[in-house]
Length: 215
Image (cartoon, rainbow, N blue to C red):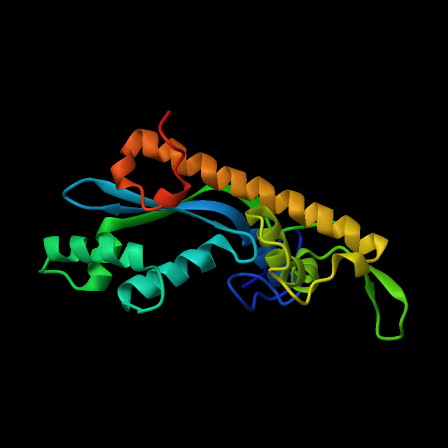
């Protein structure tokens, strides 16, 4: 079978793509942003809005799914509690079957993985230009995200290893870009939590700490 990439005549190796074009297919498939999980019970549809900045949305949802079905003790306690009630409503089904039939998830606002231009030191000590989104995430995101999260929450020094004053000019530009993107997604998350609370009802919201106070 030939590669599905346009005008490519190489043999397909993985998911219809050749070795050269499969990484491009994978990158194009990765999204960050805001998503919702709906838990359909006899009482009504409960919802949980989540956001991911460093992981693909599908990967993040898969983590929730695993924690819920396998009843992992240290993860997603509110989601598990809601899901357990639905399981009691359908004793004839096992947990996987309940999840398949009564839990839905889909993106609300999604974006391609972070991109942009950065400079990276090569092995010989010279700077090279990097445009690959996954490389940018790997180099900078883990380093900056906890600092940005702490800055938003008003908790300076949340990442003790991060020293903003030691950044180069290039790194400062990347930091500003990542900070802007992170704040944008945080605002989208808050927007959707309150938007869905209006349509579903506030009592069905599983993100109650982020609900705006009723005026």
